[in-house]
Image (cartoon, rainbow, N blue to C red; front, side, top):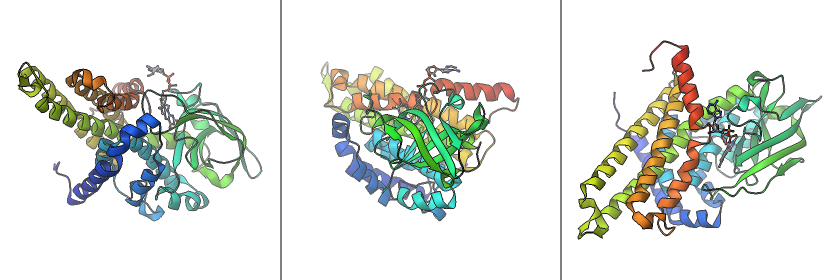
Length: 384
Ligand SMILES: Cc1cc2nc3c(=O)[nH]c(=O)nc-3n(C[C@H](O)[C@H](O)[C@H](O)COP(=O)(O)OP(=O)(O)OC[C@H]3O[C@@H](n4cnc5c(N)ncnc54)[C@H](O)[C@@H]3O)c2cc1C
C-alpha cells in the first residue's frame, strides 16, 4: 500500500494550489461580501481542465480518477470554498450528461461544459422532498415527441446563472423506480427562477428555487432510460459526497494554517499563544483529525474508482466524517483567534459559515448515518 501521491497527482495539486492562491484566495472575501458569482474565474478554471476533471476524455474531459479529482478540489477549496463547491457540482452534472446523455445531448453540452464556457446545475431537491428525495413530485409527462415538465425544485446551486439543468422528474409511478433524469436547457420557456436565497455562507454562488411550468422537453434530453433517473442521481452523489468532503478538508487546512501562524504571532501573558500547551494540544488534535478525514476521503475515492461493492457506504462515511471534522477544525481555528476570529477582517468566520452547509447538502449527515447503518445491519460482511 503506497500513500505517496504520484508525480501526476503532485503536478495537478501544484497547478490547483497556484490557481487557488493567485486567482481565488485574493478575492474570496470580497465575493462573499458582495455575493458575487465569479463566472470569469470558473472559466479560467475550465481552461486548466477543472470543469471536466472526471468527465471521460471522449467527451472532452480530463478523464481523471475520483482520487485525482479529490486531491485537486482540496487545493482549490483552500482558495475559495464556495467557488470550489460550485465547481464540484458542475463536474458532477457534467459527468452525468457525459455518462448517460444521448449523442445529441452530449454534443449539445459536453464541449461547452468541460471548458466552463457553460455551467450546469443539479436539480433533485423539492419543497416537499429533501432527505426523502425518492418522493419527488415534479412530473415529466410523455408526449408524442418528448415530455412536458411541471413542478418545483428548491435550493438549486448556481440556478439562474447556469446553462443546463440536470433535472430528476417522475415519468412513472411512485418511488425511486418512477424517476427519470433530463438535461434541460436553463433558458427553456416555462423555466422560472425564484429570488436568490439569503444564506449563512456559500455567498459567492446563487441558490434559487426553480419552477417548471409546462416546459417542453425533447426526447433526446432524457439521460439513460426512463426510470433510471434516481439511480443516476445517487451515483452522481457518491462522487459528489467525496467532492463536498474535500471542500471541507481544504477549507479546514487553510483555517488550520492561519491559526498556526496566528499562534506564533499573537502574544498574551508575555508569550506567544503557541507557547501555551493547552493550545498546542488543540492544534495537534485539529491536525490529527484533519489527516484522518483526508485519508478516509481518499479511501472512499479509491473505492469508488475501483467500483468496490461498498463504495456508497464509504462515500457516506467520508462525507459524514470529513464535513463534521471540517466544521470543527474551522470552529477551533476561529476560537484560537479569540475576538479577531469573529471579525470579518479575518477569514475564519467565513470558513466556518461556508463549511457549515456541507453537513446538510448532498444528503444530510443524518442520512449518511442511515446509509451506513443500513449496510451494517443488512449484511454481515465486515466493512474493511
Ligand atoms: C446552500 C444549499 C445548496 C443546495 N444545493 C442543492 C443543489 O444544487 N441541488 C439539489 O438538488 N439540492 C440542493 N440542496 C438541498 C439539500 O441537498 C437539502 O437541503 C438536503 O438534502 C436536506 O433536505 P431538506 O432541507 O429538505 O431537509 P429535511 O429532509 O426536511 O430534513 C430536516 C432534518 O431532518 C433530518 N432527517 C430527515 N429524515 C431523517 C431520517 N430518516 N432519519 C434521521 N434524520 C432525518 C435531516 O437530517 C435534517 O436534519 C442545497 C441546500 C442548500 C442549503
